[in-house]
Length: 264
Image (cartoon, rainbow, N blue to C red; front, side, top):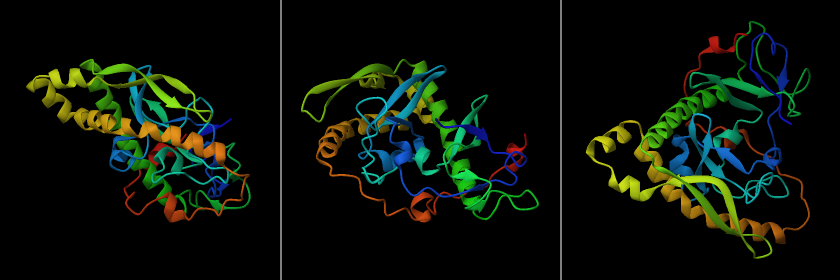
């Protein structure tokens, strides 16, 4: 089980970390949050839906046909597909809700990549982020900003009743049809009925962007059936060739980070 703790200049002053070399850690994650900044690359590649939360809804990528199984991860730990959700690319670092619609950086201390020895330092002797950690935090700051905007867009969609329960039909490895429950999609008829004032509000809140992104992302659900058939044919496990750091944090993930958030 993950053990997420807020990243801190006191708790983690002497802690070191290693980069992951396989996506096997996400093998049991069938649903992963998406931020709206990911939509241009995720649409057409990942199945996209909404799930209900205590405050409304959440944009997600659906990665499996059942809880606890991610079909996008091959037996060797590699990713099947052209785009990996940002939620997974930051491992073992994550964003954790901190209240009032905000997020803070957390680290999974049970990931097997965090300890007193090996790998690279999180902070230098003065308590500043290490050179290795800085690009990770820039990446997560950008993701946090997009998550906040996504949450606000979801709230706007909810105010106009534009979400409806969605039972998605998929085909499993045996060729049987099954239905995915607990998902929501955009109520397209309701979207088309909105007047000018409502459309303007949704536009300003980026709700229209989110709505059309989800509608376009529905077509990728057929990918789950293809992956299920592929998994059924897959030979035994092979060792992973590993990941290059540039594949995990792209050069377009740059922005500043407020280090005052790391104080306990």
